[in-house]
Length: 477
Image (cartoon, rainbow, N blue to C red; front, side, top):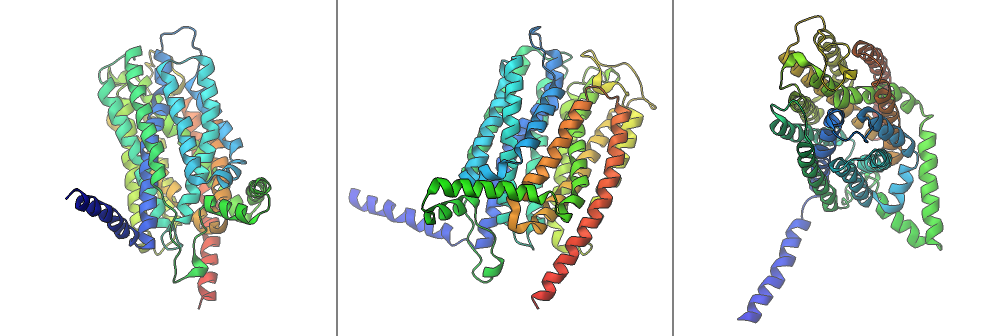
């Protein structure tokens, strides 16, 4: 009887494995995108919430020996991020995208854990390390997205990933609202409870990356197969090379050279301004705007907890935009330009309402906040509406940028996404730097000008990509 039971269990496991192995190649690729999205959702539930509240937390910190600045930390992160993007493709080539995302995630978790018992030296050291990790993480993410997509599914997959990623804004900020509701001052216990929870959440996301599997090739269209995982490419190249060390170094150098050359391509030059704009508005909605709301004493005692509600509204806008534009990608007969134009108009409405509603000194106000009034009586409803509009407009730009880069640079996805993140992060670093000094209306003016230029150059890049697609369709006839 015991032996029969053993045989039963021994045979049921392979049978289950056979069922899972019968999943279609497209199904496996879609599952990889979903797992990727959930991994990033957990990690950035922690990290984006951390970025949203850290300046407010630091202002309330009781230790007189701590002299850090949240804006300065984020400027360091994005500055190191931008420089590290030049070597990130080489790292992903050598150790593979899966391990790259896991190790990078550990650095993110370490940065968040640092706030439990913060010191100035550990604060800025962690900022440097997470900047390096961010470059590797996002380069690997772009590579996994590209190799699990085809020309027909890149838009859908970009939307699915973006929507799942932006759920992080909803859950993390909902927790902040519940934890800090009615708190005028953030105590050490409040801080420690929040950041221990965020560290655990971040670590869960790290381990989810191990569930991503190498996609199967499409047997019906070998000429259109996605490039294999860089990890697999590395192992195959090394096996055929007489010196494994030389093979890896050669691949790493080749990835670095490709990333540098990609800067000079017409397509990337056209996209650079729209990418730069996403870096500026990323800084504004993820770090500056929440701080502005928390500094408005005219919003009452709940001003600090409104930071969490603001983040939720941003997340709802991001999720709605990512989901809608991802699902409707196949039905879109007009290309990516109308979506980007919608994003620009949405942001312009948000900027105008913020200009009217939020005091100009809110970004740089001291811990007690600001008593100044802008041009209308400060309204919580208008402030939260602007949060939603910021998130929705951001999703318009980012989903279309992910889509056009994945299509245009399909054969060199890792270097292309590295350049994308290089441009975006260096502009985010610049924005976090000037956020320490510029009043709100000057920051909004910079966003308005860069948004217009970015939209125009995106139109040109999209028309070029559409021309390329038509030529490809013609050649395949």
